[in-house]
Length: 83
Image 1 (cartoon, rainbow, N blue to C red):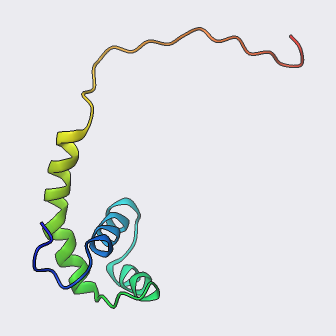
Image 2: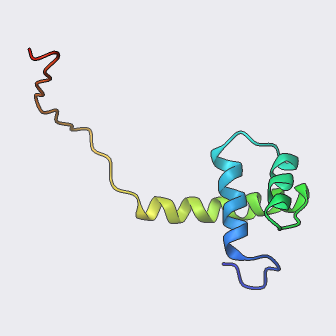
């Protein structure tokens, strides 16, 4: 998946994760990566996001647990000031 890339795998994944998880602009994300010693422009960040988002989503969906319509809640007793 990362074969032939000029940047480290962890830097690419960190950049894509921050872009998807938080409301950051591409330019702000480029500045944050510059602070960490990775010189990346906003265009490169956009290319990474477009390329790796579908791949990461597919891998995530393969590994996530199935969600069912059933749920169960246990009864809980909470003491407040000794009562």
